[in-house]
Length: 212
Image (tube, rainbow, N blue to C red; front, side, top):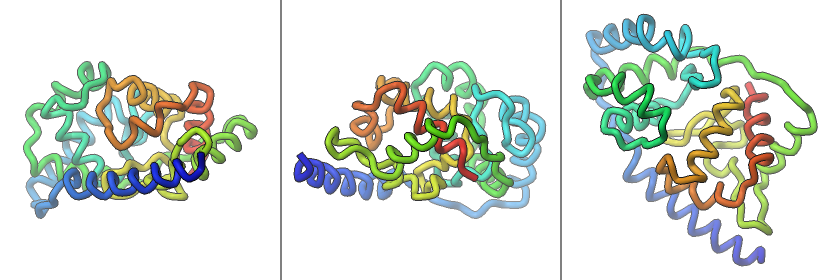
């Protein structure tokens, strides 16, 4: 079983490399004009859902503060192009992103990535410990790859892999569920989360929410 898991992990690593090659958005210089426009949008529009500085109050809306720039660009482009398919994306972000040009998207990503992250939230200690075990080690017997492989040991991610640290636990669990049900297209994640049970998703979500 573990030899099969090792082979699966090797294939997964190769897939991740390909994903980074084709999905990482190119970076253009952010002009003073686009930076000013993005800051105005962030303060006057984005904050109504995502909170001041990208720290949201409601778990319906993710924290954007300190999120990785490339990930933010990729998601804003997906919203604009209608390629992120879960219902919440359609309801909240399709209309908001449709008029964003590339320069504004990049400037928004620069703005939010530079903000101070949301505070960590501690919860049930046993649930957090269970989530940490899954995040750090996965479950080789069930071919579940450790979350830390892509999201990092500190859950801060990199490039197109999102920061999960201090994110709303409810939001993380919801995203794991929609990815598992193929309502959100994330090829690198589909196979990993397919075997996760709801209570395991809850544990992982509680763990990453507890990190700074």
